[in-house]
Image (cartoon, rainbow, N blue to C red):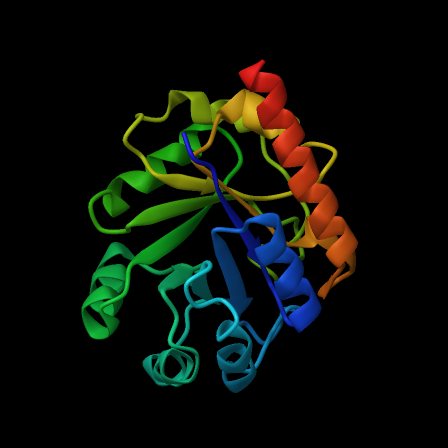
Length: 219
């Protein structure tokens, strides 16, 4: 099974080049002003030109207004939207119709009971992104470098398409793949030298770790 890999929170040409060189299937640009990974729509539009035909460009928003989403979609022309806030199934349906784009819906998890939250979105969201619940006091819904117990995903129906996110890095991605066997993974803070600063060498290390983990499993 092919593994989709999304590098999220990109802001520089060097980091984007490292993501593409490693084989990223998706690259994410974050449009949440409180995030250290925030990028202006026009700049994201410039960066995403290097992605066309190589990876899918994802616009990541948090309870964004229609006006802001209009600006993002016009400037960036994303392949997908990722909704990382408290958006309802009705909001997901509305935005899919408005922009004609597939939607990834992010949901925070802590324990198995949280998986019940996906049910209203099944058949509505095109894919899920499962992230850890933010630490108390955090202003960010994601990108906190916090992991959850990946073993709870073993109880998911096989037809639930999702990305595993939250606290991944080169040191633990092998465990994540072994315990959850996800169809896709998403990383942001785990390839940064400082909050919001992507490190191309850490991106390379992450891809090497993924390849090594997959080779071990195949053997």
